[in-house]
Image (cartoon, rainbow, N blue to C red; front, side):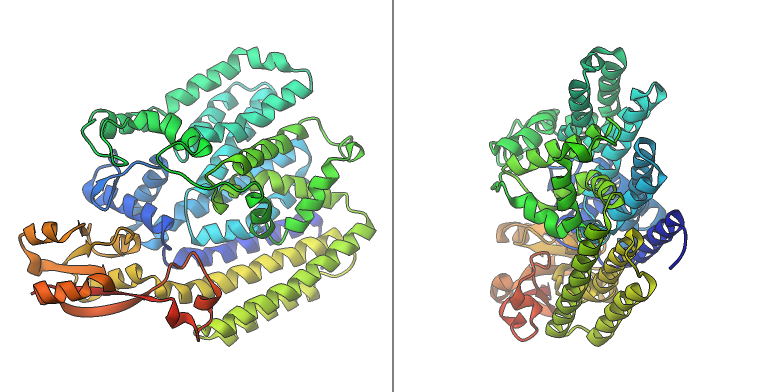
Length: 546
C-alpha cells in the first residue's frame, strides 16, 4: 500500500473509530457498567441530580460526573444502552484528539498520528468502548489538562483556565489522585531542568484555585446528601462525611488500605496487566521503555519529553504500590504509553523492524488460533462466520501491508485490533450477555409485563436488572419487608434459586421465567467450554406472588 504516512495513519484511525461503533449497539455488562447506568437512570427517573441512589438507598463511592454525563445522554436519546455508551465513545475520540495535539506540539505530526492510532487500537480501550466504566473519561480529562497546562507553560494564560477545568472534571470522575498524572510530570520536569522557580509562579497557584472552584458542584452534592444528614447509615455507621470521603477515604484510604473499601496489592499486577491491556503494542512498548534508559536514545528528543514518561512512571508506580488494584486503572496512562511507543517505532532500525514484524506475525497466528478455539468451544451462533471474519481481516492485512517498513508494522498491528473488535463486539460479547440474567430478565419483563412493578428479593448485585427493568425496582432485603409491602400482587420479583422454595411455600409464587446466570466479567475455561458450562451456571427467576 503506497500512500503517504500521514494519510495511512489517518485512514487507520478512521477504520478503528468506525469499527468501535459496533460496541455502542451491544448490551451493558455487570457489575460496574450496569451499576453506573442504573445510577444515571435513577437520576433521570427521580429528576434528582444531587443524590446518588443504588438499590433504593444512599450510595457513596464514586463522584457524580460519570453519572451526570450518562443521565444527560438519557435525557436526549432515552434510557438505553446506546445512550449510556455514546458519551464515553465520544470522549474517547476527544482524548485521541488531545493526544494527537500534545504529541504533535512536542514532537511532530507523524508522532501525533501514530500515538493516537496506538491509543485507539489498544485492546483495553476497545474493551472499554463496550464495557463502559469511568476510566475513558478520566483518561481524556487528565490528558486534556496536561495538554492545556503544557500550552500554559509556554505562556498562554487561558490555557490555565482550560487545564484547570479539565483537571476538575477528572477529579469529579475519580477523585483528587488524578492530579498526580496531571502535575507529576511537570514538577519532575521543572526540577530536572532547573526550572524549580515555576513552582512559585502565580499562574500555577491560580490553576489550583480554579480547580477548587470548578469542583464546587461535586462538593455541594456530597454536602447535601451526606454532611447535612449525619443520621444516614453509610458503610455500616452514621456520621459519615461525604466531603471527607471524597478528599481522603476514597483515595488515600484505598492506597493505604485503611478506608471503608479495601483491596489486596500486588507489585507485579500492572506489569502483566499492561501485557494484555496494551495489545497489540505491549511488546513494542516494553522494548521502548528499555530503550528510554539509554541516554543516547533520549538526546535528540525535546526536554519536554520528561513530562510524558515521568507522568506515566509515577502513576504506574503509584498504582503498583496501592493495595487497591483493578485492571482498568491502567487506561489513565495509556496515552503516555502510546507516545513512548510511537517515538520508539519511528527510530527502529531495519534489523529491529524485521524482528518486531516477525513478532507481530507470530502474534497474529496466536490470536487467530485463540479466537478460533474460543469460538469452537463456546459454540455461539454462527461461530464459523466469526472465525471467517477474523481470518479475512487478518489475511487482508498481509495483502495490504508488505515490506520492511514501519507502515507494515502499524498496518498489521491495527488490523489485529480491528479483528479483535469485530470478534468481541459482533460475536463474543452478545453470546456471553445471554448469561447476564439481570439484563435478560429485565428485557423479558419489559416486553411481557410492562405495567408490573419490578422488585428484587435478597440479592444485592442485580444492577443489570435494575437498569433494564421498567422504572426503579423495589428492593427487599428480608421477608419481613416483603410481608409489610401493601400490594404484593402487583410485584414481579427477580430472585435467585435459593429463595424460590420459600416464596412458593409462603406466597404460592408462580415462576414466570427462569434465566441462566454467570459472572460474565470473570471468564473461566469451564464457562467458555459449552460442555462444562452447565456446571458453573446459576439460576435466577422472575416470579409472581399470589
